[in-house]
Length: 220
Image (cartoon, rainbow, N blue to C red):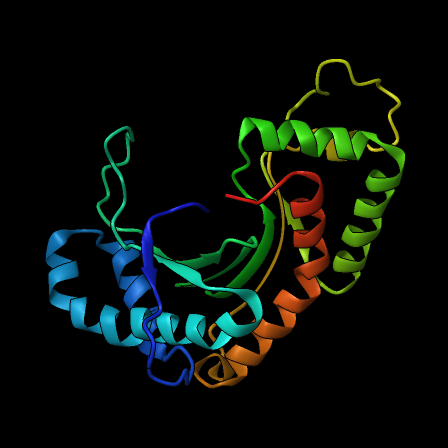
């Protein structure tokens, strides 16, 4: 989830939700990812997407730390996909929390999304060890029960040197690991209820971010 972006400025407008125009904007952008579409709808992006995201980040900062709001432009230098614009507006904190909106609605997530090689090595050492490995299993089980889904990049085979009967082999296969959940763009997403849901979800995800920071180091 690492990206350059903007901090929410002091004095940002109070968050009131993501309006229907935000989701309609991304539906249109998915169908026509062109400079022409962007130029014609840039004001909608600014008022219905970017400004609410900055306001949301500002309201969450006191509890979760400052969030960087991603830039809307894709880096296409090394990509076969030359679409110039991202079809999602996201924001992330240094503690590993993430929030985004796109055509499908609102999303929250947390964990190790893009770990460095050193972080991945420390993550696997912790999962391999009995106490921290069992602690992570318990954290993930509680999140699953609360409605979160586990995701991340995984090896098809087991990591080198790991026994085939390792009790946490499934977790050791992950090269990135995060929990997430989302909601469709129902009317409440256009109200301050969205702030409440993101805050409640990030609080539920905090044991995962704390485990990751303790055992793997700060997330990217």
